[in-house]
Amino acid sequence: MNLILASVVSLGGIGALSAVILYFIAQKFHVEEDARIDEVEAVLPAANCGGCGFPGCRAFAAACVTADTLDNLSCPVGGTATMEKVADILGKKAAAVVPTIAVVRCGGTCEMREKTNSYDGVKSCTIVHNLYGGETGCSWGCLGLGDCEVSCTFDAIHINPETMLPEVDEDKCTACGACVKACPKNIIELRRKGPKSRRIYVNCVNKDKGAVNKKVCKVACIGCSKCFNVCPYEAIEMGNNLAYIDSEKCKLCRKCVEVCPTNAIVELNFPPRKTKIEEPSTTGTEK
Image (cartoon, rainbow, N blue to C red; front, side):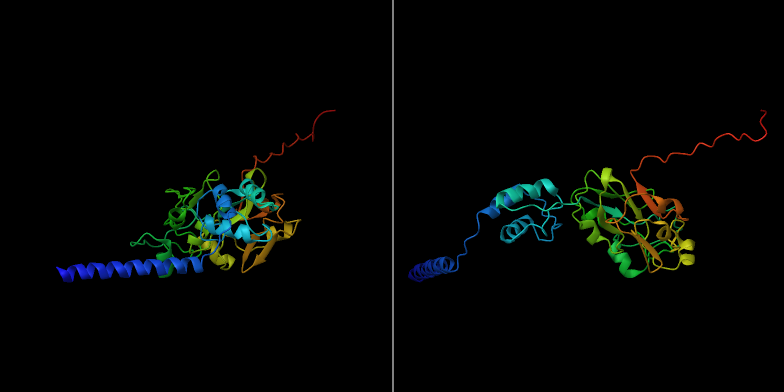
């Protein structure tokens, strides 16, 4: 009995002594945290998506508090409205945020890309990408297994079961970039949302030569440079047998769309083109 009591007392004493030591250590190395971090965090959307480049909303809030300016800091989920609230709390000026959205740069639907084999394994784009080129002749295009869909915490991207390509819900997409990071083929990118959500982009990332591309996908970019030659704003770059439209320079004139021989350039949310009405010929009419 005495042995048990002695053990209890000894352990209790050790615990109490350890608590006292830890208390003094905590006081010695205590770091005062700026109270504004809590205020900034409170106005953030609490998505913790990492789209801002920080591991969570609190880390982003701390960065905003300690930064000299907010020029290089942006919350893609909250957008301009949220950054203005942050600026008001900190007495800083919020930089203008250009709205962006996720864009899937692959038009290789089941109809456009012939299937050459069948994959029977774990449904993961990353795994398939590490194993081989995929089920079609195009080793650059979408694998259609939905890693992007799984990564999205906002339910903004889904695989269309008919086309087997991901589709972005513009109303839900926050441009957090999770789907961009999840895609092993690098076919998803964040682009300017554009006025009235109008966008023009090359719907292909295949860097093979044109003749090869045409065989594996009917809507592949063949690197013909017709779009490059017709663009009056120098918004199109050519490289590695592929055209790329710079959304910063593009003025949405749509001239490139008209000349693309494979329909590899997509125009989104534009009104229907006006058809030209031909005037009746006056040849041979009586005077």
